[in-house]
Amino acid sequence: MTRSVLSYQTTARNPVPRYVAPDLLTRRVLNPLVAAATRLGLPLAGSRVLAVRGRSSGQWRTTPVNPLTIDGVRYLVAPRGDTQWVRNLRAAGAGELRWGRRSQAFTAVEVPEADKPPLLREYLRRWAWEVGMFFDGVGADASDARLLAAGPKHPVFRITTTPTAP
Image 1 (cartoon, helix red, strand yellow):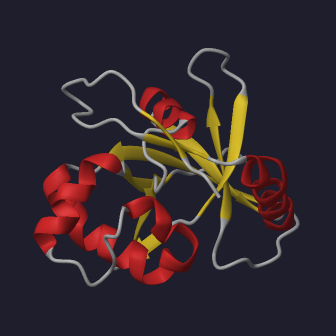
Image 2 (cartoon, rainbow, N blue to C red):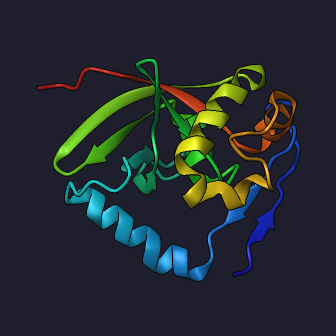
């Protein structure tokens, strides 16, 4: 299975932008299956459907994600890097996590690089079987220095649930 790595222009906010594009099987079969199961409320390793307004279109864009909860705080990690959902979430600052008929609105703040190592370690501990291939050999047992070096390639957002209108 070949992975396509696309790089975008480096900016001060994203010193090492990187995007690992999903292959055809993932894009056309696996992601739609996981998203459909999650929309039906079937438990798939804690997956949710992330919904974020498109930064240009304003339309809802959805993709399956694995939210990470540590000490009651929730995070979204982008194992594939600077994806469309990452760019949309940066622009919107908010979104929804969906599971079955439930929907949970949230606001999002990007986590600083220095705070990422313990979050990436826990994310890899839980989901390396699914996303480890995108971390270039860095695993949950990696040193803080290696996780810190990997951080710029993997955006992380702290999400805070917001009340929904009745």
